[in-house]
Length: 235
Image 1 (cartoon, rainbow, N blue to C red):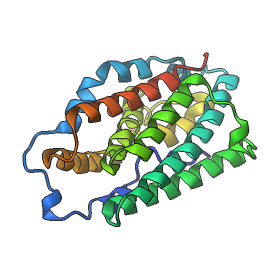
Image 2 (image 1 turned 90 degrees about the vertical axis):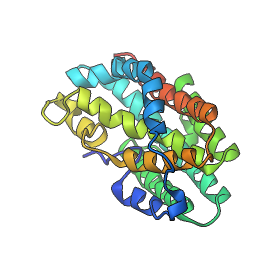
Image 3 (image 1 turned 60 degrees about the vertical axis):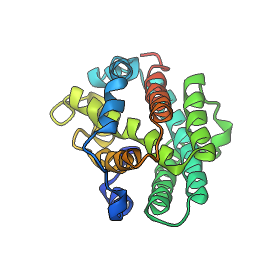
Image 4 (image 1 turned 60 degrees about the horizontal axis):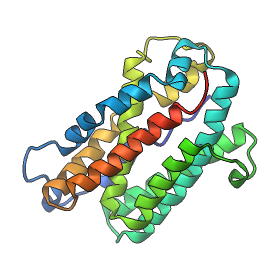
């Protein structure tokens, strides 16, 4: 059985994040994150139509391609865990720091499980493909240079994309052959943790703590990172 990816943000984690004061609430009804999602529609369609997603949908993805993606994904999660740890260390004590620490712990558990499944002793021995490496570098750059709010922006694309992919694939009712367990664990169409992340980002935006252009750039890069990584393996 496959563990659920921490990129589909857990309800337990976001509850910690939402321990907000009244000043953290949005001062208007503008849904900034919905705008970010709409602006990246073409990229998520690109992700849906990749060899990887369509291959697991049809149960026809070559096992070597699945392995190539999943081994890289294990290392991606190891790198993401380090980025989350960096972002948490740079943030002052509070709900946001607690959340980032929680996510870092979840990512560590997840990548260690994948390392065990794929018999990976040392993640640094795995050479990532260009697309995966660029995605890793994007997240690491946000963690080391930007305000922690932007780390939330970087997490939302995957948190919303993966359940959306599950909805498009009708994951709750479909049999994906050898990939059924993986799809059910990772493309869970009922996952809504991202919504609570969006509440926090919307609040930060309405309080002028997030710059629109910068957030869109990060969001777009991470959404493209997902699509490009999915598209990097042959069917």
